[in-house]
Image (tube, rainbow, N blue to C red; front, side, top):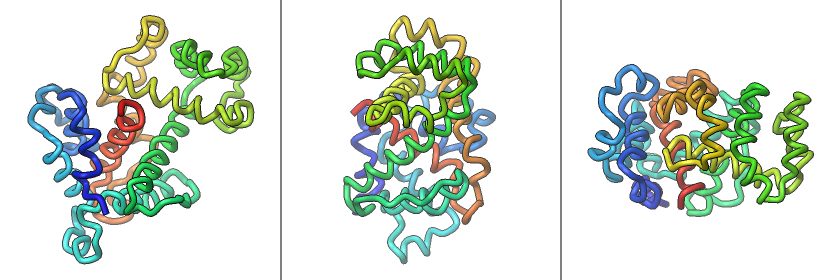
Length: 258
């Protein structure tokens, strides 16, 4: 078993204050973050170290069921918590089949498996919810990276223009390179969220798009919350509106910047 602190510290210890601030904001305010946040993300991130983030993340999970979670071994068990989050909440609200993971949630490999499932699932929902114009903007911003990865960029653009660029279609077209494509989208969006910088070409292609769709890290995560519907109180009294975006951020950061 890995505690919440043990599982997230390789990520949050490497974060800059502004990056930790995004997670702290969601752990403080959940779905009301845009309305209640009254300080900069950088200021907030300087006040929140890994220990405080881990404590708040665990509290969001055990809220309403704390004593029982201690009894059955879910308290402070990161792998088991995200496994429950996937099987009892995300699969239900996203209408996904329950995944079968190769490794146990108590193993490090099992934690990574589950985090990657969360990232990929949200990316799929995100991509298929974009307009043709928005997909074109993202692909133009990623043109160099996609070509270097050996992906047929011109064919991708053609499918978008034909209105056939759902991930189901792209999976069939790209074959084994489909996961490379998803990884490039993940990397690209992580840079937007965490402010790690994009190429000048990408900035030019996406400046207007990113401002309209995301409006910065807070707006970006709120956009993702709309994809999962109302999760607070769906299954039990846990604070899913705080827990889910925070875990997603940690998983996204781990997959791109470690």
